[in-house]
Image 1 (cartoon, each protein chain N blue to C red):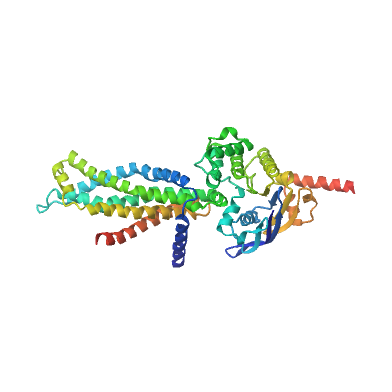
Image 2: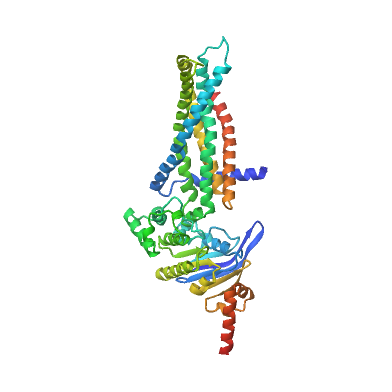
Length: 258
Length: 248
């Protein structure tokens, strides 16, 4: 379980996060949602430790991130897998090389064990035939899948994903969402996904944190999100034509129920 | 501006402290080292050969044309060509040229890794990214630069010999006698020692500019330009200091 307590963050005197608190549970796909520029990525980078918040605490299963020494942080980071928005694959490595990278650098496995594990992860994301391809030779969706394979190579306890669906078509987005959800339940990981894609919210949002202008305005799940009274959340959720139609439909449903 | 400069020097020193640590995995470090020697060093050989050959020839021609006096022996052309190549061209001028090639390569490669979050990915894994990426580049280039320096010295002298062979400006006998006269072995070592410092400046300064780049492709380009300009200025500054220390 990851807990964020009263996180505040400033950049050049400008406050980006305001006293944000949230809890992310084990074995669930936790979503951080919000508009572009709302502070989602900054919040996620604070959670991972790429940014240091000026105020507040991050706890990984009770371990205070701020109090960890270099070696303990190194140990904790080996328990974290991360999927970046742009995949962040190493250009000069093949698909197999990318997935093997954390195994080579951070595990004590033999070469044969590393290969076996890498092939297993590549197979798990359905890219068996792309082993020897370079990132520039595969599609955006495939790059995301390679990044997922690399992120899970060391069997992490915590998986962070920064906008995994950005730049993908709806069908591939759903496939990536399902893959992340399946992996989370299969390995009992604590998965945290940054997104503004409502399909992801409805498809895999077991726990949802809504960030608005640096504030945590709402927390809930995919079942309660449509019943929220938060104006900022409703403005976000029902921004598109499609979801305005959904809202009208749901209102008619509720009236009929009453 | 002064405050910014002091800040930059401080950040550069902290960056170097991060770079010069024992590698996480020696096997991977050695693999990267060989790759970098090949990329930064071996791939620079053709450029060094071409430039040194032509500059050696041009120096020889210039000397022949400009040193016209009954008091100066003709073999002085060979001697002057050798001294210029050994003392300045094969070390300082060659490193200024390599600052353009190698410096921009290092800064843009690391800068691109930064803006595409590849460096963040390494940090998340718990790796010392500065050490993993930069140390093989610095060590590799510093190890290989004496080879480039010696090739440059040799090819410069060959350039002069080609002028003697294919023109009637100076005879080959006079040229060969000139390059053998009053030879001071220390000048070869002086050139090599200087290039070691220059290689360190080129790779470390360029890596620094690439590592701390923020933004996108435009900023990577700007960082690359700043890396080349800063490396060149620092090379010239170091040249003055090293010349004073080594030749006094």
